[in-house]
Image (cartoon, rainbow, N blue to C red; front, side, top):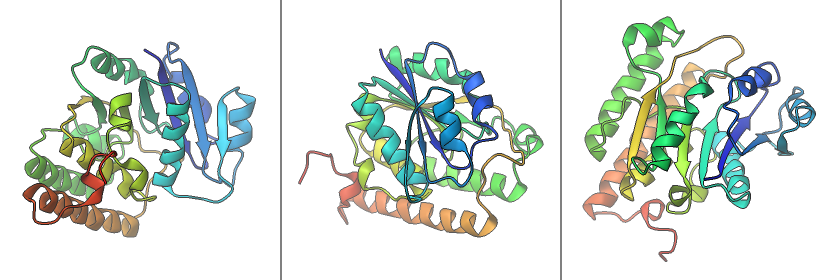
Length: 246
């Protein structure tokens, strides 16, 4: 099965080589999409021989991923791994995620940073983010019937049928994209699993500030309410309908 890694990049010049150095060698292709970085991310990606594309204007985290997935599908990917090139997530666990998809155990895999509270906070995760992550993940598991250790991971792997089976192209261009995608996959009945991955917060790693975190949390609750209303039949939401539906 052809495995393609996609790297949604923004100002990742300082950490790109670290991320690539930890990537498994059996990945078929690596694609980087630079979301109008102000540093040398794109030039470095080209220098390192990556298949790279650059947005002329910043489209946002979700907008960047949309380009990543379009390029991966066009490249004929059977499995797509999304890895942040800021080295916050350890890409060495990617082969395990891929194997679980190849074996048909899961359709969608996440890296879980919250193995223990001590490890997460010891790895640099701010306390307020840890508490918000725990609270939102509990609510999301409760409403959807999932049992994931973390809903807010930036390390993900998808089978092609997941990318072809939900309306991710219509999701938010901002950070809410990830939550909407997971809710869509849960609604469609795809099998979702996770594996532990070390937490690594440091100066060069990307992280949204407190204000953006609050906005993201409120958006997550709104998306969860939309999912619940759709599942109950009270309000049909287009985001949760199959791509071939009207």
